[in-house]
Length: 64
View (cartoon, rainbow, N blue to C red):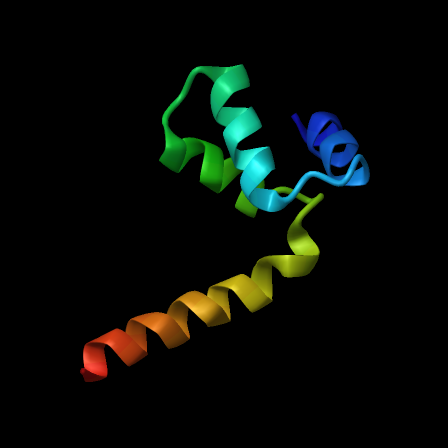
């Protein structure tokens, strides 16, 4: 799967498009596909930023 993700990213697909492709290819659910892409080596350079974004959003929504 990692080589497929590398190919898709190098072809210009976004992370969301990769999630959709993984879901379609594996026939799994969206949560599994998101986890595969999020924790892949191919997308590891965006992981810290995304996790901080999710944390900030959760904290912001909790504060309201």
